[in-house]
Image (cartoon, rainbow, N blue to C red; front, side, top):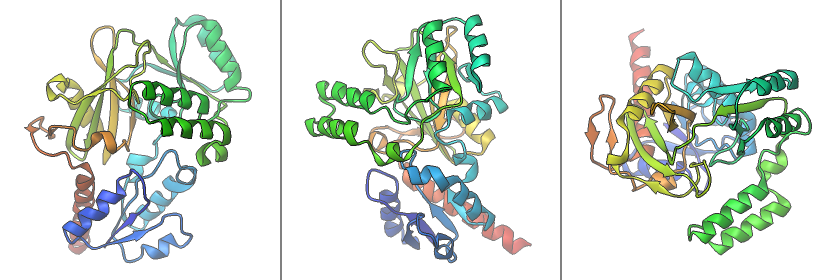
Length: 348
C-alpha cells in the first residue's frame, strides 16, 4: 500500500492516482496536514507528496514529517536527501559546493559589515536573489555598488516580502501582451496585489542575509535539465526581451538537438552523487562557454513538461525516443525502493 497526499490543482498527485488505478497498485489518498497522519500511514510502505514551495503549510513542516516517516522505514517521495534544500538557494549553494559541482559563483553574507566589505572589492553587475522563489521571482540585477548597498541595507533592515505581488502582476501583464496569459489572469493578479495570497500573508519577510551570484552576460537562454531517477530530459528557456532572466519566461524550445549533452551528463552525475530522486537543474554558460548550475529544485511545473519532450536520456546517455512519463517514473522508483527494503528485511 502506498499513500498519496491528494490536492486538486496542477500537481503530480492527479496523475499518481490515475497510474495506480491503471496498474492496480494498492493506494490510499491522505492529507499530510491531518494531525493523525502518522496513524493513517501505519498500513503504508510509501508516501508520495508533491510538496509545494508556495504553500505555507508545506514550508512549515514538510521536511520534518518526511524525516519522521523515514525513521519509520516508510519510503517517501520526496525523501529527505531530495527535499531538505527545496526552495532555499542558500542551502543549495553549500550542497553543490560540497561535491564541487560546476556552479555559478555564489556569495552569501550574514551581517552588513561583511557584505559591505565584499561590495567594495567586487565588480558589478551581480545577480541578487532571495533564497525563496521560482520563475525568476525575487531576482534582480544589482548594477552598481550603490544598488548593492541599498539591497544590503534592506536585507538587514525591514527585509523583503517573500512574494512581491507588484512584480508578479507586471509579469502576468507581460505574458498577457504576448498572448500567454488571459485577461482573467491579469485581473487575478490585481486582486492578489490588494489582498495578497495565503503564502504571502502567512510568511515573514526575508531578512538577515544577502545573496548574490556572479552575472554571466551573453546568455540568451538557460537550459532546464530534469532528472528523475536515472532518466534525464531537457529544454531551452529563452530570456525575456530586454532582460537576463529565462526562468518563467513562457518561451521554451523542446528540440532535442538544441540540448547540450554535457549538461545532461553533469545533471545525472550530481543527482547520483547527492542521491536525489528528482531534481530540475538550471544551466547557463560562463565566459569560456562552460556550463554552470544556477540552482536546482526537486519539483518542477508539470504543465510545460507534459507531452512536449520528444524523449529522454538514460544514465549512460543513451537516447530513448518515447513519452516522458515522469510522474509514473516517480511511483515506479518508490515501488522499487519498497521492494528492495522488503528483500533486505527478509534476508536479515
